[in-house]
Length: 245
Image (cartoon, rainbow, N blue to C red):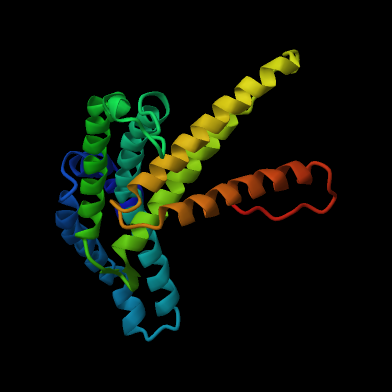
C-alpha cells in the first residue's frame, strides 16, 4: 500500500491543482489511475499462483483502497464547484432581486441587473466545465471495481453539500445563553436566508451539472437534521440510537 500511504499523496495536490486549472485534465489522469490499477497485479500474482481462496478478498481490499484514492483526488471538483456556488448564493441573496409574476414595463430595467446576472452566468459556466471534466472520464475499471464518473460526481457533491450545510447550520444556530429573546428571530431569519440561498442556487445549477439537485438537497438536509436529532436524543437515552452520517 506504499503507493497510497507513502509515495502518491505527495502528488495529490499537484493533480488536484491541475484539475482545478483545467478540468479536462481528468481524462489524462484516467490513464494514471489505470496504471495504478495494473500495479496491483504484482501483490496478487503469488496469491493467484497458489490458488488461494483469499484472492477475491485481497483484490477487493486493494481495489477499494485505490478507489478511495481516486475519490480523494477527484474531490477537488465538487470543492471547486461549491466555491463557485458560494459566490452564486451570495449574489442570489444579496444582489439579485426576485422578479415578481407581474411587472410594470418601466420597472423592467431595475430588475434586469445585468452585471449581477452576467456574474452568475459566468460562475455557472465554470461549474458546468468542472462537471464536463469528470464526465469525460467515462466508466473505468479500477482493479475489480467499476467506477462510474457520474456516480463519483454525485457522491462528491453529496459529501461537499453535507459538509457546507452542516457548517452553516452549526455556525448560524449558536446562541448566547445570556442573549435576549429578541435576538432569536433575526438569527433565524438570517439562517433561513442562507438555507434559501443554498436551495435556490442548487435548483439553478442542477440542469448544468446533470444531477437531480432538489432530490439530493432534500435527502441530504433530511439526513443532517435526523443525525443531529439522534445525537440530541442519545444524551437522554440509555440505549444509543444508531448514527446516519
